[in-house]
Amino acid sequence: MRIDIRMESQMTAHATIEIAPDTKSRVEKLAADTNRSAQDIVTEAVEAYLEFETDYLRRVRRGVAEAERGDFAGEDEVKAAFGKFKVDY
Image 1 (cartoon, helix red, strand yellow):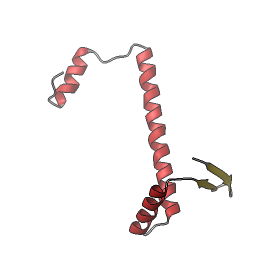
Image 2 (cartoon, one colour):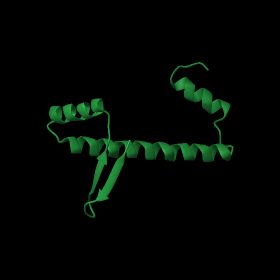
Image 3 (cartoon, one colour):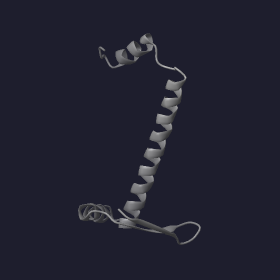
């Protein structure tokens, strides 16, 4: 995959990406089905991906820090959590 990005202004950047033909077709179909541009679809997808991955990484780092401090759930906490969903462990 190749991504080339150049700044157009302070607010936008121009990017060129290489994607599989099937992915391109899916983007174009979704754009047509939703009466939006392919650019809007890809921009929204990239933004959603970055939000998801950034949040995921933050949660993982927080969990690792808790584990390094020895901050684990006790047996009663685990039983209570599983009990909420009526699951035996």
